[in-house]
Image (cartoon, rainbow, N blue to C red; front, top):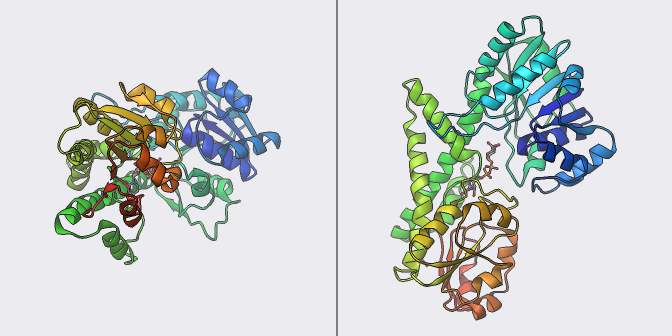
Length: 435
Ligand code: UGA
């Protein structure tokens, strides 16, 4: 099939490259000339394990191309995916759809023959209907169907999520576009991957409902972690014991500093706003959003408490800045609020992240950027582990202890083994259990 991907950001690039790997002819389009030139020169602007190789292979095979202009590729396309950004609007928290509608109008102007326009961007329920109205009223001579095909990729694990998804959701209200979408995904092993067809509005809501549920699950275990500390229970074991019940499942029960990233915070907020607009407030999700916001700063206060109530003039090390490992993404990362709280408390903050240093410089302010974990630990009166990068799991603990001024470690992800830390003379503050 001939596929065009509008928007070569995270979702667009990963989906475009993986669709090419399924054997389709794919053109990824983006308005940013710099981005397209970089991609044409073989430079992948985002950090995602395995992506560079897939892009290189499929470009070499002639199945994947990049273009700044959508007119020619769209004219030849069977399906055009919209994967542009839908950020929160600053004024009201609703998803900003201006890029989606602008792309849709350009697509419609260029389309020839039957064309399926597929929304991959996370868009509020009813956006597909609005696109259909625009096409019908403004481009009555064009033969365009609108489909919702939400994305469930996780950053850092996007390639395997694309290849082995739990499900592919397709919201389509007509037979012809259903056939096109079946062809798009045919080369995936559809015996293992259910292709779930439903109405378009339902598909749009499945995306928001899924992210909101996962955010709620994380928030649930985070609150349990706080309770465990009071009651003398161990949150990891509570999560394990709960997760053995298949109705609950053991995934997304890892307590931590709160969820971040470009999806959960934005999507939970947008869903809350939509529900309020329809006078059907989602109290559970409203509370989830509020708890998570408070939690990030509370993690900063947790570090201060571990330092006898004050960090003024003290050197504090921060390990891991990105919102999760295997990404360079700093959007809504808990580290931002934690670092701010420490700076507000008068700390001298030294930070290190394996991939997020560049992005961190834009948001963190007056901190010192170090080259590795040991530099961060040098002279530190405490270090706080915020993001669970693999390399922090195999640190030389003797060396770490030796360079620290006082060996306090606040582990917000339960990466460190308590017995080993005690053996090395650290004072460890774990998450969701008593030290
Ligand atoms: C999330 C969803 O998991 C994807 O299914 C979805 O496609 C994506 O949003 C999206 O809407 O585009 P992502 O934001 O990449 O993916 O990352 P997650 O792995 O879901 O992690 C989100 C946040 O939750 C991170 O800050 C992570 O540290 C936190 N988290 C996750 C926990 O604190 N505990 C857990 O057990 C799991």
